[in-house]
Length: 140
Image 1 (cartoon, rainbow, N blue to C red):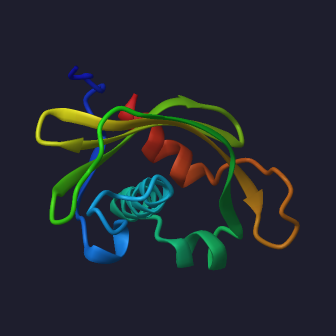
Image 2: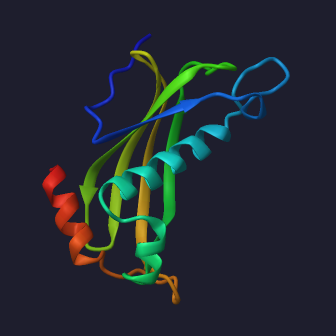
């Protein structure tokens, strides 16, 4: 069964290495979370907000509040995957992202990720920085 994700705002290519797999060459279920986190960081970087600028300039970080993940097919050793990030809802201090891991046109994993913008020192919810909100607004 092929699942079609929405058109991604950003896609990161990821190669599956030996360290990502079990003895049978199948990607560990938790490794997909690492792939998705890398894609979120690179997506923010492409928007002009690398992790250092978020912390040092804007005094914020994003924390994952919740996620829902579905596994459809396994990725295998040496596969070249595409990890997609697409914002679906943007609030004052939160963002909901659709993320998909694909091999070619086939969706292997699909997740809904709920992230919250928090103060880098307080770790309490704060409004997203205006420049970031502006860039995210361009995507909708």
